[in-house]
Length: 184
Image (tube, rainbow, N blue to C red; front, side):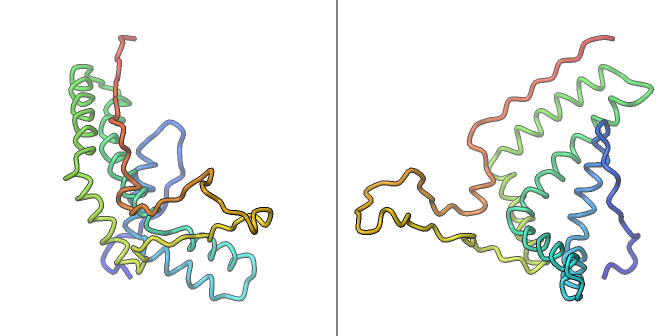
């Protein structure tokens, strides 16, 4: 499927290194069509437990999943450079402060409409590559309680609204990023 490209593996996740999380998101994003194909092939096997697991995983990979994966890959990729610098044996605090400020500016820029538009275009392209529907699909139909049959319901406790996926991935409140570096 990816001829001429080196194989990629999901790294073992570490509690202290962000790089492995970036590599995991990047590798999964780059090889998502292959992952979906493998899950589909396992689903067609006649091994009950493996089929159920593969079908469950395949069912969870939707437009929202791709949006979150793309977001995490972008943010973790930007923070990886800073993480590597802070773990370096030759740590330069002045350069670290500059990188922290640059990362703050980058994260603020990601909240712009144009930056989100670029990310959303990438998400839609990947969804199209993977044959994943870009339409919002309601998972369950709401049911009216049998105790309310014959009654008129004027309002409900929870109201579900039709929200486009690109809007549901946005956060309306501005993020505040602060970092404090103190000498050892």
